[in-house]
Amino acid sequence: MHKHDYNFRPKPAFENGIFIPSAPQPVIADIEKWNIFDDVKFLRILMRNAIESTGRLARTQKFVRGKMFGQTHCTISDPELIKHIFVKNHNNLKMNRVRQSVLKPLIRTGLVAAEGEDWKRMRHLLTPMFTPRHIRTFSEGMRSTIDTQLPLIFQKGAEIKFTEAMLALTYQVLSDALFSSEIDSDKEDLLHAFDKVLMTMGKPDPLDVLNMPAFLPRVTTASGRKALKRVWKTVGKAIDQRHAKLQSGEDVPLDFLTLLLEAGDDEHAALTKDEIQDQAVTFIGAGHETTSHGLIWLTYLLSQDLKARDRVEAEIDALDMNGVPVDKWSEHLPWTVACFEEALRLYPSAPFVTREFTSDVEWEGTTFEAGEAVMLNLWALHRHYALWDNPDGFIPDRFFGEKRKQINPYQYLPFGIGPRVCIGQRFARQEAMIVAASLFKQCRFEYIGEAPPWPRMRITLQAENGMPMRVVRREKSA
Ligand code: HEM
Image 1 (cartoon, rainbow, N blue to C red):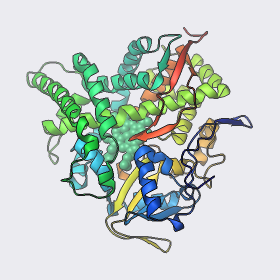
Image 2: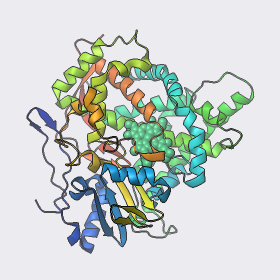
Image 3: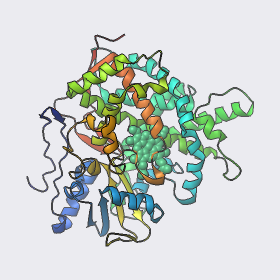
């Protein structure tokens, strides 16, 4: 294969009973011979589908360093080095410039984009909302949202764009957890506006990658800004209404919105209206697509690996959904949990964790210099040849029972690492298992795409073709 044969798409295969989905293979072999033409080709790939830019070295070595358009980039894929940089030396890192250029216009003070003292204050104020106790209180609400939505979205026999259906479902779960049912009249509009924002503003503009000055207009994001204003308006209205209710002493639901309005203590000022708006947009932005795509890839993998699917169904059938409390379901579904973990290994929803060094960091004789960009590429880490047996194969057994403990905690990081690890991890895991149990109890899904689904990076890792599926009734369903 030529080193720039980026269009090569291997077919999915079964090898010794293991399903190997079709996925971009590392094709950039010799970074030492890199030249300006490679830079341009690389930039094109980055803009089209950044996941395809992962090189072979990132999947075979501990770290890879190279220059692009004059800027040094380093991709790290070694558990000890990850710990060294992202945990021990987290104070020597700041957010990556290109990442911020995408996120800042969207979420302004939102936790994902905040830095320095602003981030510390925000993380401190938001952490109590994501404690196990609070997340458990969302479980019944999650179940009832899912129960109401499932029959509307998944009509038996229908041929659907599974991505669209799941995004609608996880959006509704998050929107209910945030606002209860208070924005229902604006719900559709908000979802469409959000979609538009992510599609237009959710990828780096070439001018940002090339480090061009901020005053040059970024045409790729212009159309999304109007949609973003609609999002802010709807969320702002919900905040005003809830604030008025709280002021007048009316009963209010204990959802994220109430928690955001009540956050603050002696040492940390309460959140302003704009800040609440930004956190709400951040939760939707960071929380609904990520969870959705994890579940979409899980469903695809199970639609191909029928043995794994049968085991998931047997486990779910054995769960007494009306007897066991909803927040305890996942404890009864270890195989389904393992399948979800494995889906997130193969398709980490937010695969690029990017930063910049603010001062030099030493490691085993190498100096990573201030100003260098550093990336934890979860796609490469999770498919690293030295860390995983059969890295491209779907093998949920890796995460089942005692085997889970053999996985180095720094080699599997779908929710990131260090102080900026995903704050919504518990929420996402709980939701994923409630959706999986409810969905697979009632339905099976047959993949009906003409070609195998291809992962494409748009902030999150999605299926390029929208994952067409046929919904099939399950014989044993209640
Ligand atoms: C399967 C689902 C999810 C995945 C795979 C995921 C993944 C991640 C990753 C990798 C990061 C670290 C980013 C970085 O360090 O640059 C992150 C951060 C974050 N996530 Fe998630 N996430 C998921 C669900 C959620 C949910 C449901 C919420 C909110 C309800 C959420 C809110 C956040 C926030 C606010 C941050 C920023 C934390 C900070 O910088 O302090 N995520 N997520």
